[in-house]
Amino acid sequence: MEHGVTATAAGKPKVVFVLGATATGKSKLAIALAQRFNGEVINADKIQVHEGVPILTNKVTEEEQAGVPHHLLSVRDPDAEFPPEEFRREAAGAIAGVLSAGRLPIVAGGSNTYIEALVDGDGAAFRAAHDLLFVWVDAERELLEWYAALRVDEMVARGLVAEARAAFAGAGADYTRGVRRAIGLPEMHAYLMAERDVVGAAGEADLAAMLERAVREIKDNTFRLARTQTEKIRRLSTLDGWDVRRIDVTPVFARKADGKECHEQTWKKLVWEPCEEMVRAFLEPAPSLAAVPGVAATEDGDEGRDAGVVAAAAIAAPAANVAPTGDVANAVVADAAETI
Image (tube, rainbow, N blue to C red; front, side):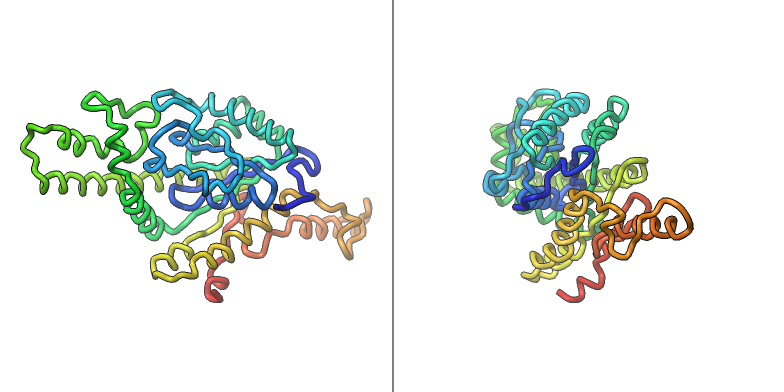
């Protein structure tokens, strides 16, 4: 755990956001950052705020949480409503509590409507009152969809069907509310209805085919969700006041697809190390001009103006693997990937 760097080191209190489409590894990164920088995680997934179906919603397990406190995770009944305005109030309260304890709030989740409501809702009061850093975990579409499909297969192996069966509400199930909006429950409806119909004509072969179609639909809808989430984040990254830094996890998925055991090393080198340095720089107070080696802080004359430019460049220099473009920074991974 990182000591000596706090979320209120100087100026406005600091909050880190971990953005990304489904299956990009947001939770893993958020927990690692929380462990390193004395933080707590605030969930921003509109399905995971509800109790129930942990496999279908891919909630982090207690073991995966690794002792890091999590907020707004499984805090609403399965059928309860939790609109963006309510999330904004609850998340702001949780963040205030984390900051008051001298810890770093890390908001992580794929529901970008929630995140935008928090940041820019109520006249952008939250953004005005805090110093924000947005880390965007992204991947090339083809490999992301390959990994998302693999994850669905793993969920099936872990008990997705039994979990959906236990949560099944029958013919009148409402898939527009609460946790039943989760990808996986609506897609399983026809299969579970046929399975329940003991007087029906569906045999084992028919049921197996229906289950296969349901799993295929789960994957297809997951792909659509990932594309929608990515487009939303891309739009958010163009807005004023959104300091979004993109980290490319494509090489990690590429190594997994190749069956190479070194994908964790790849994650550490190309994802974790740039993010760790990025957050460290964000949390540390900017040095004064006098503290920048070789720069004289003066207030008049050409030399003073030149010194100010040099100092600004030195203070704003990004981490080695992160290249900013406007408010968006892209991870430079190609050269590093070749060395692993």
